[in-house]
Image 1 (tube, helix red, strand yellow):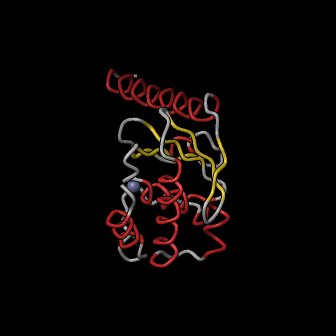
Image 2 (tube, helix red, strand yellow):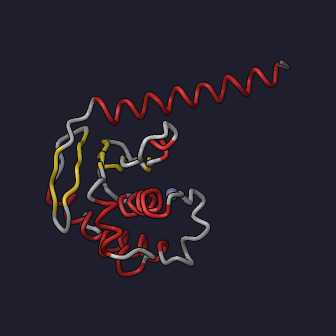
Length: 159
Ligand SMILES: [Zn+2]
């Protein structure tokens, strides 16, 4: 194997280990708590958070995706009642991807305390659970109304 091959393999391995560790951290060290507004979902956070604010923002993201996005109420309900939302202290735009690599059903999303990425990550979760594929480059987001929905959420979310 060439030195370049070794470098590439090491980099791939490092990413796999990193993603695996991230996955374990979300799945095993968390105390998921079920709450709900429009629908029940689970969350955990690094620091204590304003639970009402989280529920309001989840409801807002759901309403935006329902009215502007490509999915119906039944589909979103089925997807979002499986959601585990992790609220990190730092800004996070972390996705379901970390759990998809292991072959498990992706249900974890991570957002920052500002919750600005919440609707975006919920849209990726809907893609993963409803469409069966995540559009990481957001190529179809404008056409499917998802970009409009995340825009609405970002303007109207509770601060
Ligand atoms: Zn994205």
